[in-house]
Amino acid sequence: MQNKNLITVDLGGTKILSALINGQDQIIDRFKESTKITGEIEPIIEGINNSINKLLENNSLTQKDIKAICLGVPGTVNPNTGLIGYAPNLGIRDYNIKETLSKYYNIPILIENDVNLAGLGIQQAELKENVKNMLVVFIGTGIGAALFIDGKIYRGSSFYAGEIGHMRINPKGKPSKKSKLTFENIASRTAVVNAIVDEIKKGKKSYLSDIVKKGKRIKSKSLRAAVEVEDKLVIEYLSRSARVIGSVLGSIATLLNLDSIMLGGGVIEALNDFMLPKIRKAFNTAVLPEPGKIVKIDYTRLGDDAPLFGGIKLAQEFLES
Image 1: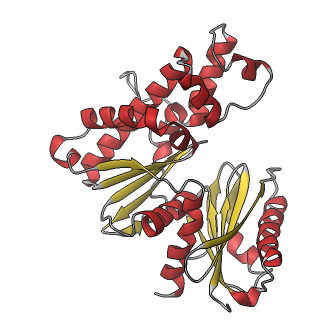
Image 2 (image 1 turned 30 degrees about the vertical axis):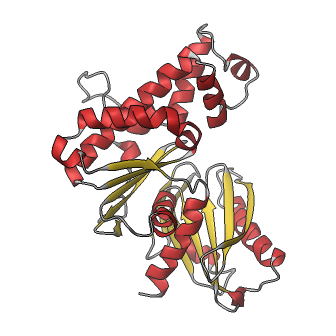
Image 3 (image 1 turned 45 degrees about the vertical axis):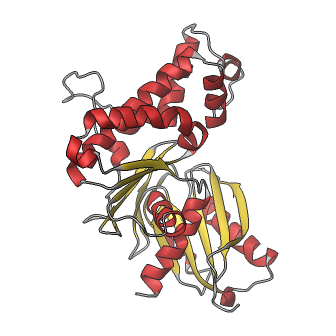
């Protein structure tokens, strides 16, 4: 088994999900724990190390059995140096996480943006590389994307490609020069939930009212349950999110002449049957007809496994090229 295995770590704002992948590109073990966000880097490094060591211990492996450790980070990342430019959900800025982790492991450490890693996983394990020009968009706490051109991931001139969540948009058609509204501030799960909570606090009735009164988090599954009972308030804001998503994706498809758009993240995973028809309708309204008619819009079935499988492609790129 020596040097045939791979460990992928998906570092998120709420959880650290890690997987051991064998030489046949199969996930043979997983480990999950909560991310400790304190404003300091040490608890995050400790969580990453703990997840890696648990996988080694649970499978009676040593570092010599691992060919690489691949880490996905929710922020801007230079995969060549391992420098995190900015990861707002983690409170990290200008930090070389590769250098730190290399102190603990005599194994190649590979770093990538989390959505890029998920896109690589979708390309590798789900689409079998049968795409040419693709956009992968994850809708969750924020909105991030991975862009593939001619079958290869495109990271941009300074590794910021795919940061579509920060695009300035104006859904009401008013002058946007002074607007601070961004794509993710309108269409992410966080934005949808915040809007619903505000309405409930103003007296609007909702299936989610009890959750809000108890001060609990509204998760994607709760949104799904509200839609199933035809909660008007939840349907209103999810529908607005879907329209904005479709409109933005239509403009991007016109610009880049894509052939595929794959959606992921908790909202899409829980509500794909509700969201996708509305996204496609808004997309078709926004995109030019000729480039629009070739675009396939779908959602990933890999769920949380998408970035885990992405480690396979990342290792191929940096260790085998």
